[in-house]
Image 1 (cartoon, rainbow, N blue to C red):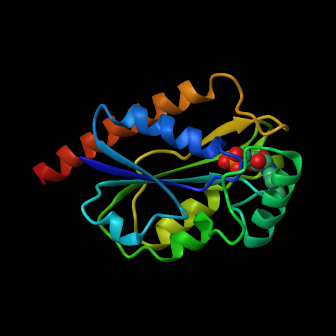
Image 2 (image 1 turned 180 degrees about the vertical axis):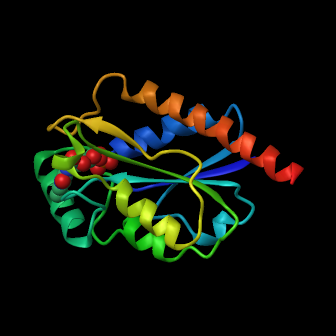
Length: 180
Ligand SMILES: Cc1cc2nc3c(=O)[nH]c(=O)nc-3n(C[C@H](O)[C@H](O)[C@H](O)COP(=O)(O)O)c2cc1C
């Protein structure tokens, strides 16, 4: 099985979660981890499972304006700032998908508080995946940072386990498809 994890990350946390999910998935799949900045939609050819993740900004997926603000703040405050001015986000990347025969899953990073307060990027990611007719193999997952933009303790392990669970679900789905 082949999987691709396409992530967006301003301060590196969603990137770290994407790598941990990949580590969990590798028991079952050959996995590529691709920044949304570099992910060419043609790289989805031959992929069985696509996992898409991004940070939550203003209760949803990032927008150009929130990314620009976050990058400026990050550079000013000396935070690890991976994104560059003008980079796309998952919102833009998802519009370019043309593949139709993929299993998918979605995750986000956000503050740990009730989602009615924080919102979450997965709502928009899932909606767009569904608009492309792409089925989800698992409930979306959220991984948590504190207000200083550091991952909470245990989140890397939780992401690894989620990746491992995704691998099992995708393998079962592939077996079912092979039988029918
Ligand atoms: C402009 C901006 C808006 C944000 N809005 C929210 C929000 O509405 N809800 C929330 O839970 N976190 C919010 N956050 C915190 C981000 O979710 C957090 O910075 C992100 O998960 C870190 O991921 P990254 O390190 O991959 O960029 C916001 C952060 C920024 C910079």
